[in-house]
Length: 162
Length: 280
Image (cartoon, rainbow over all chains, first blue to last red; front, side, top):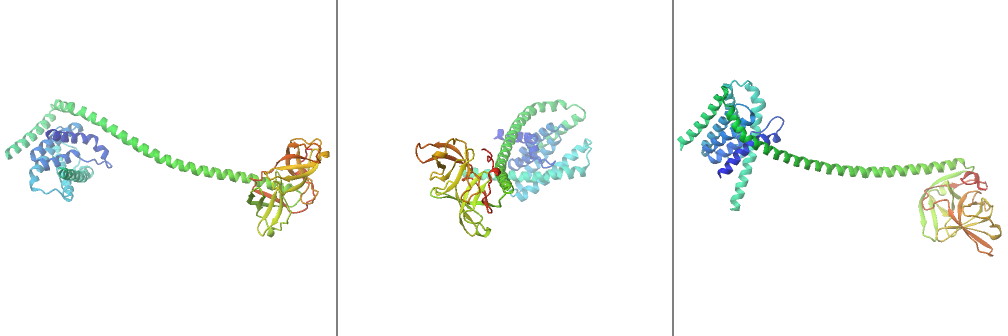
């Protein structure tokens, strides 16, 4: 199970640099690692979410060539928070999943922006939100809902078979 | 449990912040390099797989496009073939009509163009139906010709059409002579769809294969000098009164589509107005 977990996390990081460009709509690409972190945190809890977020975020930092640790920290935080809140959340409906992922994406972006500002990140907030964060958040919500529905279907199928 | 979680979060956050602060001082390149050593080969491998998958997908799309294009081109090719046939058919018709018009213009007798609308090719009767009839003042026994030569005569006139007995009809007889030798005789149709020239033996000396046979113009039905056919073989019957020569008709009765009906004076000599008329 741990191997599968590691594979999922690692695969998510790799998918961001290989699969995500193929899913591009205009200039907007989904943040696949974030979606994976959220899905893992909801199912496995805060620790798994936190570790998965750190690993996958670090991979993104390495792949992106920016400051190491920024995305590792923000995704670890997202994973942790979602994992900790999961028992109190009801996220089985797409109507919850889509806005939830959108909000989480925005929150992660805000955290990342705040952290980067400490290191004198030069881009204006409004511009970043308009052209990068919000479109990507919406796309994340859509992809996340599709993935969540797919997982739910697979689980239902496995239950029926077993 | 809660402490463990918070410890984990603190460790992760601390590690990240440490990395960040080290980078600002220019000391974290080693860590980035170490991580890259792990991730870059995997990324390269996955990218290769990704490229291959893209290649397969692109090949599939190409194949699909090629199939669609192939279908479209086949359809286009079919349409073009039909158009080409139509154009060649129209060109041929144009050519035939031009030749018919040229004949119509150069002949000194009035003629009327007609289109073959039916053929009777059973063997008992060989005839053509032409779209000129009583309304066009077509008379019975009107001579029917084409740019190649004699076709036959009108044997029946109907309101909108005429029936033309062609030379190969077994009941058809036409007074004729050989252009080169002036040998007179009768061209008869045969049941097998051929024509023969029947002539008196004593007059037949010197007829050769290839000789042109034209109408004699004695009966008043056909003008003189319309080509009928060429001698292909001589049937010498020794001391018999009549000899026969097999003729190859100049007109292809099975394929002729347009004809001229000679409506006026039939006593003129038309030898000079057809090809081969000056072979004497």
